[in-house]
Image 1 (cartoon, one colour):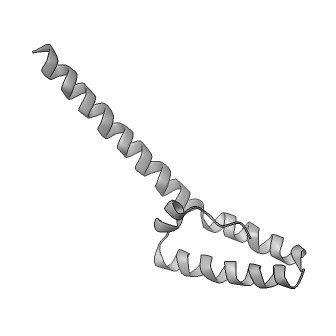
Image 2 (cartoon, one colour):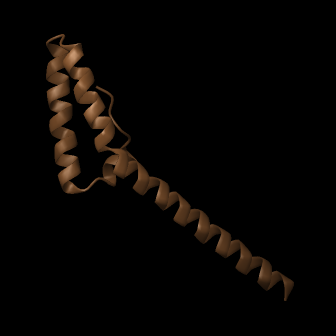
Length: 81
């Protein structure tokens, strides 16, 4: 099973994280039983489950970029004065 990043897991809600952990456990069990056909289906569900966390991470990056841009604009304005 492929894990998502720690950053994405940190942005999942408690319910999403509980579901993620349960699916990872099921997927690991299926892989240990060489049931890769079923593990693939579980992995697809995990991939869909983490999309909201990925979007939250992207938004945090956009917010950081906006804050940096605002800071640079203020610094340039102060230098011009």
